[in-house]
Length: 223
Image (cartoon, rainbow, N blue to C red; front, side):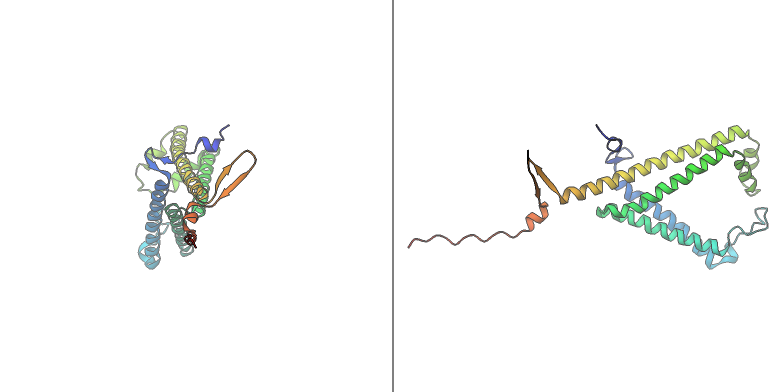
């Protein structure tokens, strides 16, 4: 009987791309996004008078983001760049353990988005509260707020559902890449030949080729 993990296992993603190549592209894409975010945060920290937004612009009396939150966001961006770099390097060099942190981040991000969807279903009024916090010059704010609450909740849930489906597909691609890389490493180390009552462990092919050949015996000479 085929297990569910084996049934969904595939070495291709996005119809024509290998899961290893897809993981490398995904890791580089996440690295670029977090690098841009890090650049913006560092620029804001270096010139707070120019980039520091006050909530007076957002109809509040408190600052939107203080220096402590900026430092935390900077540290998170650096950590994400490190995790994405590890996944890219692990997929490129066939190191399965390096892909695990990025896979765990994907699971955590998927769980957070699922909690957001659940909170919208349980508390539909949170959408209206969020819309009230948007700036007055936000595009189509009045039109969105004038919509029926049921229709608005349905549209938001449909949008979040599409995002969750896409994130789940990416999680599957990274997991298949991990299985491919780990299976490739196992196949390169252990080779078994099984008979009816014995199991013989053979060395890897590279190690076999590295064994120096024995010297030939001296030629036989007649007395």
